[in-house]
Image (cartoon, rainbow, N blue to C red; front, side, top):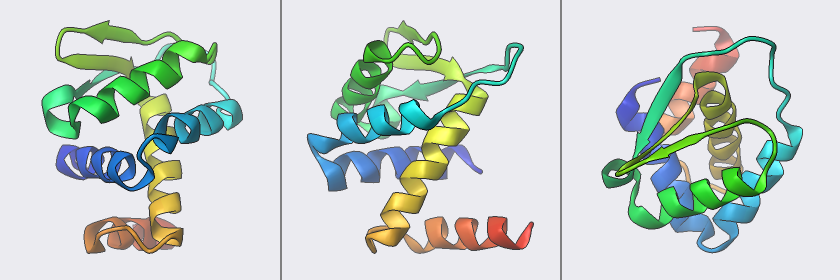
Length: 115
């Protein structure tokens, strides 16, 4: 999944769900099961997803005891597996509600086919 598409999923979900975005992330985190070991850290940049999306994502991660995250000026660093899980759940929700872009739907369909 490209960084552009990752950012689009987060930004669109924050826009569509508004203040409910933080609650949605919190619900996603309740179903996440961390695998042993440490994965790579990836960055979510505030300038790419929007200030409110980054703030709500930070608040949801802060309220959860699932996994550590590392806020930095202008970005948020989280483990790659956790970000992938969050993105997939957001993508599924956007598709189900008819709010996903064509690229998001194509990515989901390709994943279902194993491409």
